[in-house]
Length: 425
Image (cartoon, rainbow, N blue to C red; front, side, top):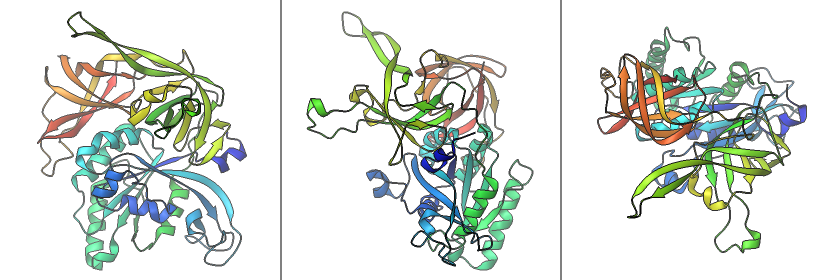
């Protein structure tokens, strides 16, 4: 399905690191990869993940050691060899960890990240009762997108007595009982002290395979970040075009490909008095001049990992994540752009992100909702409702296929809370 050489160049599977705030997601990513995924200055200051963080690593197999010591990440090797027996190791594959925010105010970013996941590690703090509000909310988000490959990690076992760990384990089993994840493995670890991290690597190999994909489909990428990589003061003749960062969800892109980006940029038409009369979005067209997976330059890129696409776009169009939520593809192959969505809604019985599990009220005409489709986040107003079918006028347009799932959140107790999902009619 993939060229053998490509498996060494780029990750072909995205693994989400999800769970409640401060349960140890970013620490576990570092234990697996040696990379602190929360690198944004505000994240370092506040000690929480705000943007999607990516960290790639290669997984190797020792031919002599028994499981779980058999499976090791690149970061766990010693001088490129097995740290347990000194044997030469065999390359298996590269994987990419998507570290998503656990904080309730950053749920929209988490939902964007969930769209990019092929599997997930749900991190649960053994020192706290389970489930915490965002544990429940993240698990619901994974259920909505239809994710099936899950590993549960019971972190911080080093700071509580054994009976507390056993009680927390029982709570986790009760939480997932009767759900799609009831047979998921639960691994007790200490990410901080690197205890049982090799068991997590073994579980990744066993439970999160590379998905079957068709590389002949029209290529498509969901944009999670966009950048102007030029430093201040760069001479005009040295400027490079805007860079798009995201995950390819189907097909493959090559250097030299012509691409279209939707919804594109806003063209504002004003009245003679300077008031906004109309806003129209026009798609952008450009060419791929470079492809990168981390620091590795590629000639072609497949689904998996964070791919950076270098373009000939005016860099000002891409700066400060201005194109986040866009969809990239070959010209003429992208889905429609919607300024209004008609959704068949599926509303949760309870608001999963609140500690007291409030009853979810029906959607009402005239109310404002937050919507996530792909990596796009937008607000909308309900303009019509007939039974479970609602029509929502969007503040910002989105590019999406018919029948795509849309996560729906409502402002409750001054926070956006996930209340269900809709399917585009």
